[in-house]
Length: 151
Image (cartoon, rainbow, N blue to C red; front, side, top):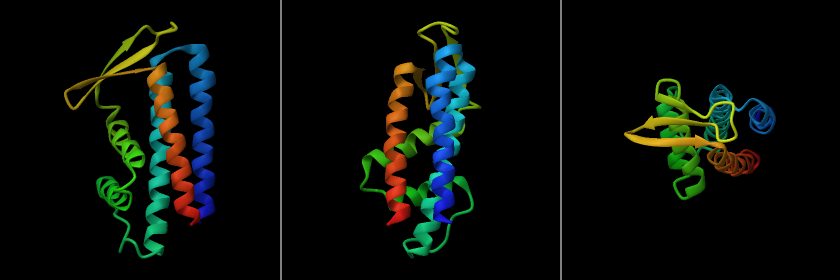
């Protein structure tokens, strides 16, 4: 079971990396940025699901919450001391709402393509640099998740 979660996590990462390093490089559109964020969202959900299943087996939690917000809260409690992990979870909360947020497309088909979104009253500019920051965060998320699943 743990192996399935890790395999699925790696598959999602491979797909996301392709979007980031190949598709975005050649198309430079906000649609690719959105698809990348959706792929990352699914990857984080897979990781969280795996973590909660293992935490239940280790008796760190009594049951796996059924709703997404309950899952987020449970994972936040499990990793309350890991700031980098919590940063990913906060980013994930934004990714969950990405489809319904107000978006503005900037510089499509150009080197400085960006997706400007309004989240919690704050403008967030998702450009290539920001995507690389997210990619680094998620790299650490994956290794933390693997460690937890295999320990």
